[in-house]
Length: 416
View 1: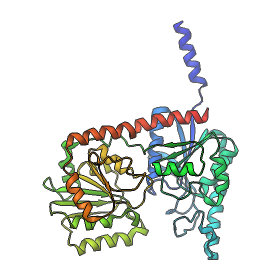
View 2: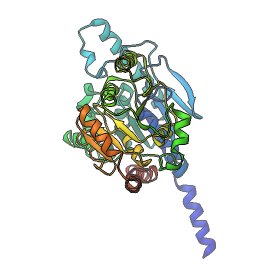
View 3: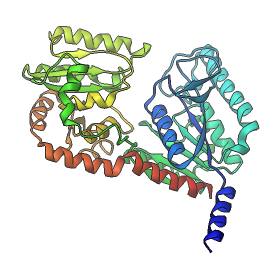
View 4: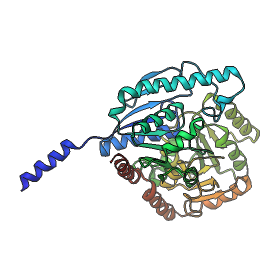
């Protein structure tokens, strides 16, 4: 009996087909995007835990020309035309109607390039993939969603940013609507607001979940707080340290925090960090000019660049600030609370408000500098035991182990 059981288990393993996913993103490292980086990390974990194999195809805004390269040992195929087009919000679908004939031609050529090379790639490889998982918005994402649906293969679409219509590219929204009414599709909404939007557009299967946070990085570490602060900043243990780490662009609203700090006592200090792209340079200069205006050089440590040790910056802080004007979710509000660091955030309804319990994990309120200053002085008094309890609650809902387990379950259901 024991021998027969061993043989049976071995046969099951031999005939169980390994899952292989085509991961498709509008941006991918080294071109930074939060969704692209989360996609990469998620599938690295799924490969390690559940042996899900994956290939990566990406579009690009910053890099021109098709290229095959490696990132952290993973081969990436980038599809991007050999010319640049100035990025404008919504250009993938609305700007094709632009009255400027030169811009129209460029956008049309961009569309044609992405679709041709996407088709050239997938026509040879479609049979090796069990599922398509898309992040972001590009012509390639629209075309390959159609191609996988045409071959009756499952599709997961991740809604990562605030939007008015999830059926992108909107130029082909009627086609996309039919696709996401099928049983073998899944829409992942990272906030209640995006869930409501997806259901409004009659997308059939919607899973609302927070972005996964790595419990091996984002955890309470009060004992090393000041050691990390000395290593990473110019401030010390006597200071009350506020932090904000985000891309330098207008929607992230760093500049509002200069007003807030100017209203607080001198013991309050601030660090600002984040990636700086060419289009954000003017805004970055405005922030520095405002720091000059308020003479806050000694109280603000501002630097630009990709932050790979984000968890350490959280752990050395007393409060994480989140004044963003628009968000799909805002994963840092989860990661900060997981580290036992309270968050004060702009009250984005059905986005951040569902993940911050006022008085326990921080506070949500409207963008009023005076009210923020008063709230900061209040939130700093939240007891450590309550922050630890809140950290455990966040991890029980949003840890990568919880989210990955559910992903594996849902991927299997779609395929089978």
